Image (cartoon, rainbow, N blue to C red; front, side, top):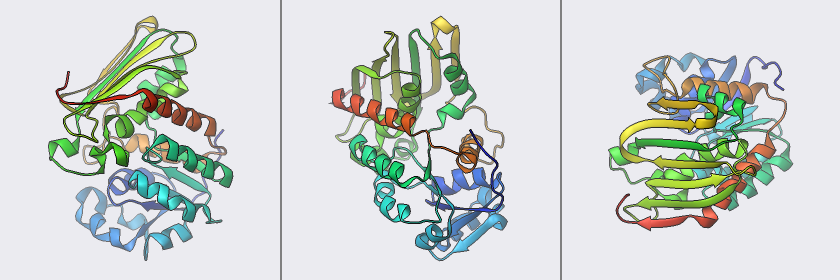
Length: 310
């Protein structure tokens, strides 16, 4: 159950990439004050889609100062950085609420450790799992499918488009089609009751990458889910098919239609997620533990193949 949002709550953002172009406009739609480290000022000032939010920002010296003053904290940093900040964050008595990006850590084993630390701290937690806040995700959750399900998500990630060598390409750092993109589907499927892994595999041209992830999951009723995430595809589409529910979803991507052409398509979903964080009275720890458990089960059987896609 959610309560009323406390007006003027101090919410700090750590992360000058998605933290700014995703979470800053998402929070700007809510009655809160955003704290940002001074070094982010130049990014906000030079990006046309962000400069209009400057009036709602309180600038502080650095990230430590932001953490000290915050009642709620959004972290949009690399998974390893996020896991490394947890000890400092959990020592802050004033800090009551956390929104952490996915994956929680580079590996499910480390994610489980971080999840345990947060749960013991008693701080409110929301993870950046967005699919449950989409129209199609709510529809699917509301129907609780008992029959077979097929989900296919194909696109070309920015790091492949621009030929960038960064952490989002590296499985060891929490990137790739399974750990970075697939975790969104893993969270949704865990909540839908899919907890058994029949097969899982990744394909990439280079070691420590996962361009494509394919898996077959099942639940206790014997229903199967066929999943494919291709992060280096010439095609851009998102498909969900559940024949027993007469459900067939075909979208350009999972995030629906943008309400404002000047902002990231995910901003309305992130705003709903942030509102949930700032008004919630409890954390869905059981859901998050199920996600990590399914992620670990998938990793345990995943076969990694280097070479031609097919």
